Length: 230
Image 1 (cartoon, rainbow, N blue to C red):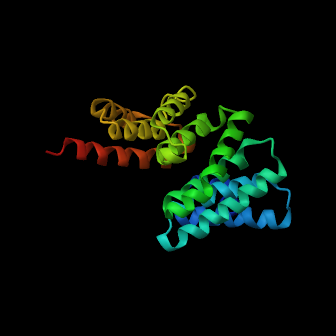
Image 2 (cartoon, rainbow, N blue to C red):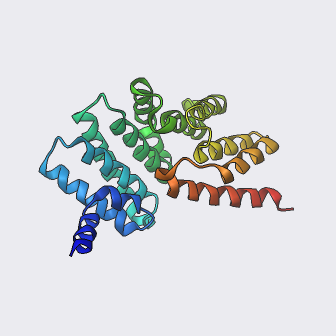
Image 3 (cartoon, rainbow, N blue to C red):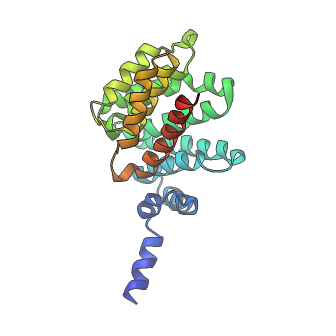
């Protein structure tokens, strides 16, 4: 009986379900629970931002036809979080993350639509708490400056600056090292790029980010293989 009760509690605990997010059914169940909580209590800040975070993960892993729905779900939830408590960084960050993923996934029109709001949301996070989630705002701004065309404010120099700053909060960030590697390789700095990719292979952002670390390690291995190919 006791084990049955524990199992039932775990099945309804969205934090535990989200921790098992590599199982997409668990991630969706977590999102649904937070969505239901938010529908019952419109000012549930934690439910709002955690729903946005779950939608971001789902948007990056579901079938292509379902991605836009998830990212828009995340934007809506994050916007709610920023309205509930604009002084907390979570809503602003996950709003930027979902908008950024939508922009990267759906071409130039989406990129132009969300370019300024993404940057403004991330700069708001830096104002509130630059150390949030191991310097995630600087990391995401580095990505912003890397991906946005120079005509619209992009800059490889600023991208590198923000990514290096993110590493001051966590020198073992697999994502920051991977994004730095991409920038170095784009700029023809092959040795520096290789060095950053090798750092990804041994980096760990901590147990809360294990699924993301695993994915960046796989990307780093694939890119290193291309560099080593004749």
